[in-house]
Image 1 (cartoon, rainbow, N blue to C red):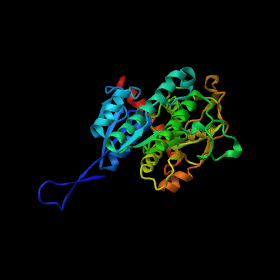
Image 2: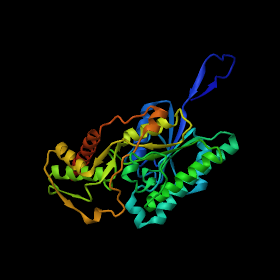
Image 3: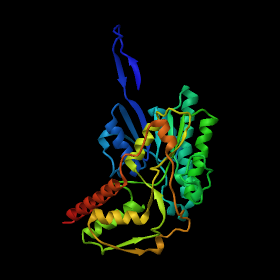
Image 4: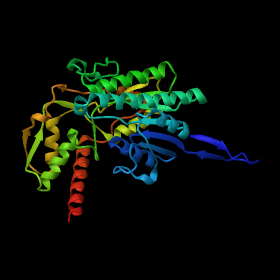
Length: 345
């Protein structure tokens, strides 16, 4: 918070100004949950960057000040940072889907590296001009570690960055760039490396939302009781997106000198477990059909990460059980399907 003395001779009272926070990609899945968290926090003036103001299905516009911009446009980004003068920047914008990076690597590199670089450079210029840098939380990915061996699990921040896809390479590049802005330029940078996360409103391109949508369609009678899936034996570390954004917010007030943090649950879940839990939640029995298009040659068999550094620096622990996440995802898709059916009547 910033405090400013009231004008005049009376100097006993202090007027409290809200903290200005800038969130890029606020109209995305994680961005929408971050917006909700800050709206409930109070004392925060939230500014959001979106590519198009007319396409905002996931957030309540009344609680925000929105700005139309492409984060790869440096003059526009720099102007926004200079005019808003945020004390905190949460950089979420980017291309987040691994298969898309294989289809269009150049677009992924441009969005993730240049977009992040523009935020960091704008923060550096604020430091040069005013002597104070906004705190910048850069979200990279647990994918930066690449094919981590079973003997190296749970993955910690000390592992080398060995990306194995264009997506993870773009995030590893941004990770290293952000570290240089902290070390060489003194920008107040925090790097979050989130592992798999899920929750309501996520695109069905991602596995938990995909299965939740399929089960909701089966329960509604608009799909046969067959779940199409890729490799269901792989294990991933899933965290609820609402816990993830809570971790991001807590990192701004960390108590350690570390500035690189995993965000994870510390627990592995096999993909087949997700199907079994959703089967219980939905009350429908399904068969599983392997979809060759969903198989990925770059898949790592098992991923589990440590959040010990994050916990030590902030006190954060995951609070939402994974089964509750699945329940909320299933309920979200059931509501969406009912809403769509009602609109067609």
